[in-house]
Length: 445
Image (cartoon, rainbow, N blue to C red; front, side):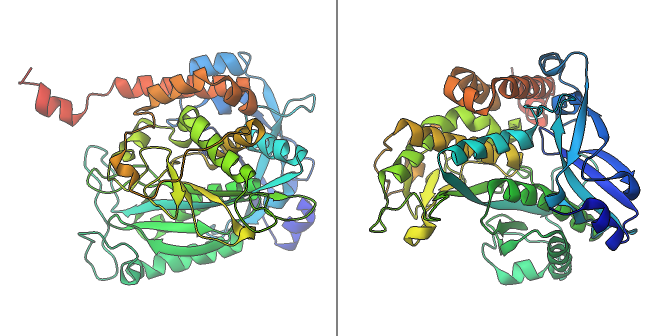
C-alpha cells in the first residue's frame, strides 16, 4: 500500500483531486492541498451526492430513501488509485475515495461498494472474477447548441468521415496527435490499454482494456472516460460515450468479457480437466440469460441507451448465446481453456462501469449458485429472432422491481435509490417535446 504523503512529496504534488464516482459515473469530490490528504482521510461529503441525477439535480425520492437528514460521509482514499493528473498545468494528483458512515460502516449505495460486495460474494466461494471491458465512443465536432445534430470532426486531412470505416488504420491515423496524448495520459495513470480500433460508425473508436480484477478495471474504465474527454478537448474535439449520439450511426457499447478463476489453483473454473467447457460455465451463461433483462437499467441507464437496441443495428436485441457469434447478446470467443470467458455485449458505453460490471457479475453468480442451464448455442443470426430485451428505461425498471434475487444481491437500499434516480430522469425526459413531435404531429393530428 502506498503511503500517500510520501508519494505526494516525492512527486512534488501541490494539490489533489479527491474523487468519488457517483451513480452516473460522474466525478464528485473536492480539490484539496496536498498536505491535507493522507491514508486515513479526513474529507467529508454529504451522502446526497449518490442521489443526484445525471443533470446534477437531486432526485427527491432517492434523497428520502438514502437519508433525509443528508448526513456527512467519511471519505477514505484508496492508496492503490493514487495517480498523476497528466494534463494538469501544475503538479496534481488524483485519488478515488470510498465512502463510510461515521461509525465505520460502508455506505451501501456507493457504486464502488456495490462492486466490492459482488466481488466478495465470489471470494467466499473461492472464486476470483476477471473482467475486460471494451469501451466504444465517438469523436464529434464541438457542438455547443444541443438543438443541432452531432457531426463527425475533421481529422488531419481537414475532411470529416462520410461513411463507415470499420477497422481502418488510416481513419484512426486521422487523429494521431490526439491518440498519442491519450496513450501518454493513460500510461501516466496506469490505465492498461490492450488495443485501439476504429469501429463501424463515423469517427467511432473502441479502446480495449487488459483483463484483471473487476474493481481495478472499473477504476480504469472510469478514469479512461475522463481522460478521453479531456484529451479530445485539447484537440478541439468532443469525445462522447453517449450510447446513441447520431441517429444514422451505430450505438456505442461497453462489452464486458468475464471469467472466473479458482483462488487456490489459479485455474479457470469454466473449464474441466480436459480443457472443455463445463457445467459451471454454462450455468454462468444461463444466469446472464435469466437475470440480464432485470439488470438492464444498470447496463443501459438512460432513455438514449435503448436507441441502440434495434434490429440489424450492431447491438444485440436478445440474450441468445453462441460461439464467436457477434449477433448474440452473449458471445463466447474462441480461446484456450485458461482463457475461457463470455462476452456480455448488452451493456451501453454510457453505463457506470462499477454498476454495470457488478450487475453483470451478479447475474452470472446467480446462475452458478442456482445451477441453471442455458439455451442451445445459436449458430445463425440472432437479429432474425424476437427482441427479448426491454424496449425502454421504464420497462427495464419494472423488471428490476420484480427481481427479488437481483435486488437482494446488489442491495435493496441501493436498488431503491437507483430506481428512484432513474424514474426522476425518465420523468424529466418525458417533459421534453422533441422536434419529431413538432414536425409530424403539430398539423397532422
